Image 1 (cartoon, helix red, strand yellow):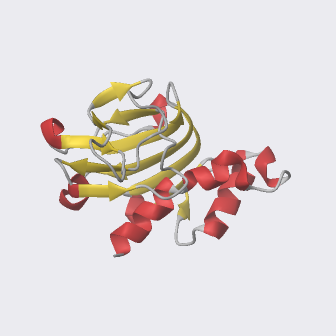
Image 2 (cartoon, rainbow, N blue to C red; image 1 turned 90 degrees about the horizontal axis):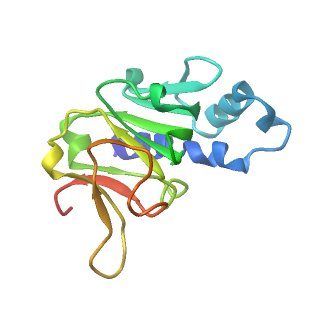
Image 3 (cartoon, rainbow, N blue to C red; image 1 turned 180 degrees about the vertical axis):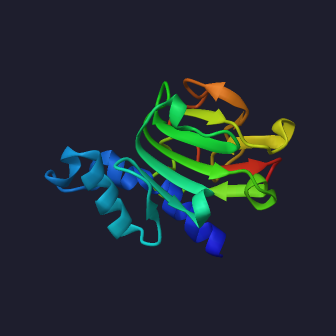
Length: 160
């Protein structure tokens, strides 16, 4: 349960980056980070642009680039070409099974960089739908844009 809460915190980065802040707070990355930390407590401010949880296993970068994605992590971006807010999580046995995005990030992923250690043949970005087949895309490598733009809800192994 604690993991799901942390997953919600990380992928919820878009709530702040997506314009949900008051106009005066959105003027600087530092103000956006402070507002995000107030909305999702328990994080450690790493700088004017980044917060981490669980000793750095879960991260949010408000104004990210491709270089923002560290080795060993799975990173999703709200815009194509690795721009905008970035949610990142370190690969682990549990994260490789399933990693749910928060309501904001659902249907917002536009690019990614998979630098984690999950088995690449079975790890996918997926879309939750009430009908089949669900949209999915192999979550491997580095993609400037995703196959089904703004439609993924979680990352998971196999057909979970």
